Length: 269
Image 1: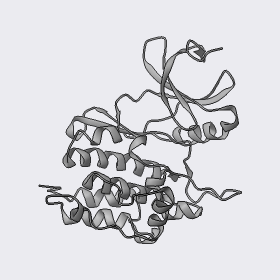
Image 2: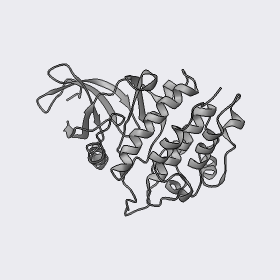
Image 3: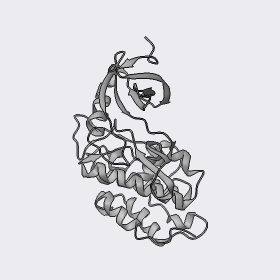
């Protein structure tokens, strides 16, 4: 039976697919009152990814983190039910706005990540594609929601086999090595995102293996040396500390990064 048109939990009607990932399809659904929801479905052999998304997402209660409401199965496909988060992915938003607007969004993204970290969780794939930006009451008139928790899990989680999780452009050195991850791995990914927001480019570029080696061994130039115009030296310092190869040399947590960024009175001229 086709997924669109399916009635879920006697309450939600699945309407159409709205996004496709490497391992999942997201559908738009509506309840009996017309409120929108998202249904994310995985192939049957990936039930553990749906379990992980539910176990992590159901613990989140923060305006900058989209929660997961139910663990479901639709036509034999495991999945989760979530509130629908409308808007643009952060990767689409950034190309249309300047550094000040980027920082308004980035700070909110860190707040959602900090909430996750306080729950003892690591996202493991913190990147612009996993942030949704929409109109809201936050600074700059925008609201940000962290999404996609199917790679997430407890800090320092042990696996039977070596696991390398993440996206090449944003992956931390320790994730490449396949060691148990702490929240510091997400902070490294945040550093890549901050560098990209300041300069318009990633600190490491090239073929996949070249990028992985750069994550492990290359120290990037200061963002202010890449971007034309003046960039706060504080912003330089924050980005480069987040990108330290040794996790112990980064900030201790996302809240510490937020505290440093909120000291800024002038981000760029």
